Image (cartoon, rainbow, N blue to C red; front, side, top):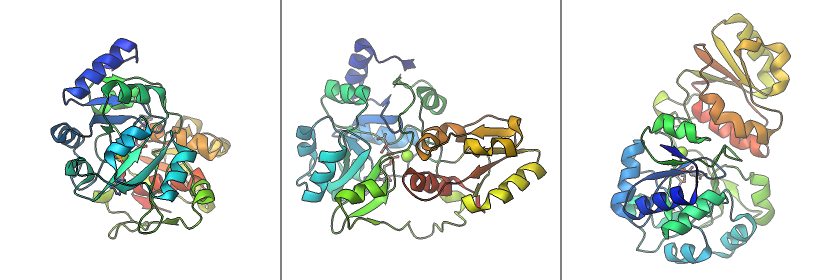
Length: 320
Ligand code: TXA
Ligand code: MG
């Protein structure tokens, strides 16, 4: 059930969360599948609903610094500086956890990932529930993250979804760990360059072994649309245009500037700037435009373009 976030709907959602149930809610990045982060059983329901492997920890969403203090033992100076600048907003900090945070949330790690979202409905819901909300993106495991309430309803019919409109960023939060060294664990809505203004020695964590960028095995695919996806590097735009012309079953996703070069009825324009493309990407990956393969033009790896490329590489069956 998709519901407008009226005071009554918020109160109902908060009551469900306090009873240990799962509710989907909007954030400025993507929609989240939320449960009381301090309730082990409730958090298990999130893993089960999503079909998420239990070795992949969740982010705890807080509404204020007091709630943060209930989850972590310490906030290193660099983490404090990042939080001062980017919270509330699309930044997740990995911090040493208190024993009261269930191992289910953190997948047994000694750290917990915490974020203070800026979406007013997310903040209102956390405050009304009075507890931090553990929430992964509200998609079934492997599917593109949801950027509208309708996407969540598509993956989880029957679940209460608070409708906060389309997500402002459309890409997940940037995940940063500070200890033992500052690392960007997941590129996200806040570009690496902006994070480095505050933490100059921030490095980009390497991808997990067994997940080569050039040919991600099918079983490692994330953000996957329901058909094969071929990703073209920006320098290979001519190859994309040729392949699109040769294959009448190809659907093309790319920046608006591609429009004159590909058949209009088989083109899904993503926008002009990297931010616009990031905002429309996940919805576009869910496109129902008829065709058997998606050909996607990638972006330069700077700013939000780096995040868009990360998501596309994980979604791709082949990179050209
Ligand atoms: O924007 C977002 O972050 C969205 C919205 C709903 O807030 N949430 C989201 O959650 O993307 P999810 O579960 O799809 O991704 C959580 C990421 C994963 O890459 C996970 O491995 C990492 O955060 N993570 C969580 N806890 C961690 C920890 N203790 N140490 C390292 N990484 C952690
Ligand atoms: Mg996710």
